[in-house]
Length: 159
Image 1 (cartoon, rainbow, N blue to C red):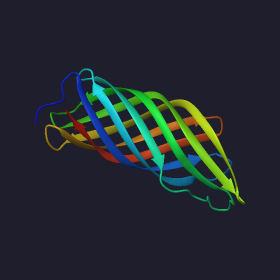
Image 2: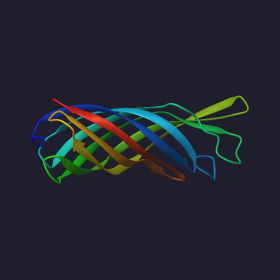
Image 3: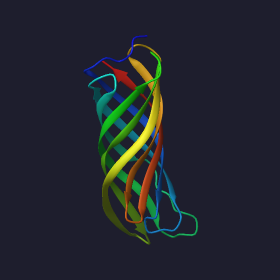
Image 4: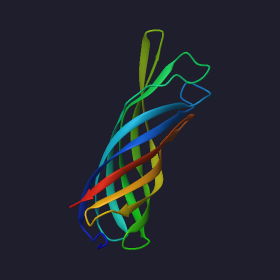
């Protein structure tokens, strides 16, 4: 399998477990998120990537009456790539993200947008010349007393 070359665009998708800590609660809420991503590898070592994600479920943290969900998020990243071989590579993501968090209690709900620096680490393995599967851990937001992080697994299709 040939390694990815410069100016190689890709699209992908992933399922993720996201944790929201500190948002109106002392305990975290565990949420499911689905995301799409698209990007381009500008060289063997650097690329650009964008994410668009949507929450699938809400959670009521233990001991709390309010329910929390991630309505959506979008993010833009620079992607530093460390090729390990023709088949595997690691990457780091650094950029900005905006997440919309919904909290509901006793029939009333509110939404807050949280924007901040976003960063993460991941890895991917080539299954074919065009298909790579991988996983990543990303801090989507870390602002004030709110931290949102995500553990995802998915695939990317390189054109």
